[in-house]
Length: 356
Image 1 (tube, rainbow, N blue to C red):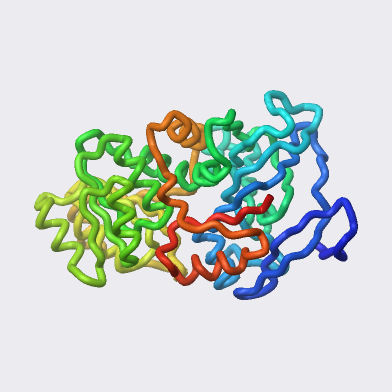
Image 2 (image 1 turned 135 degrees about the vertical axis):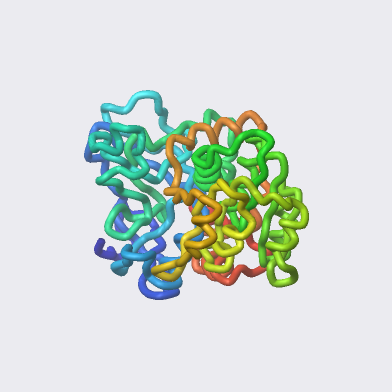
């Protein structure tokens, strides 16, 4: 993508990564509608996600390496600006939640109900796939645009993407009403899991978190007990309350420490849900412990058919995620937002960037 001179129209503002911890505002052409099902979206708010921060801090997540300049961002709410001739059910000016994953609909994964692992998947703000939403306009297929019908604020619309991941993780775990759960790491995804677990009917939910403000917020989200591993032995504290162990653990920190804790607190036959993204290329488990307990380990890949459910739960008031939004920045302050989230400063949980 080539940077264009300021002032020419029709151009849009766009925040791009230009190096490690480097961003700048540029003007780029407004994307065009090229296919009948294309929708031109005017971005309203963008959420800063942990994966965005990975790219900001290191320029990569595993094999996905940024080629600069690049636009990140995939959590967003928008309004419909225009659309192609084949689009039905959308109106200009209508607010929508954006599903960031674009699947082909034709491969074996899509045909068997797994579009989130589509062989040709393209994801907003993912290097080599689609430029992200930290810009004034993007084009997405109509099937990725979910109308909110005025039942959500634009800020709440941003939260639907991380919340959908939490809902999918809970669904994939198979947790039954009355079972116990633990969430290790209560950032936005961990909190989304907590809210989903409470809605699902978990009997007791335990949490762990190193940031004191997030410990308090986790209790607001539905945790019965939250401990700080810097101050206490999490494993001992949880097993003192649940001597038989925990049915399902959601690892949302992406740390070797929390993975080890998860294995220790799980009961035999328990499930370990891997959601956090480790910074290192490899992690390890003790075969002795996971084999003797016959622990099932499941990876969670984003969300799968859960975006509409997230919208519905928020729209009818069955859940409330407003507590997650702790900071809001202007578009010009995008790098400040990334630095705040990167440094876990000021009790940040979810920082939003107001684009329009």
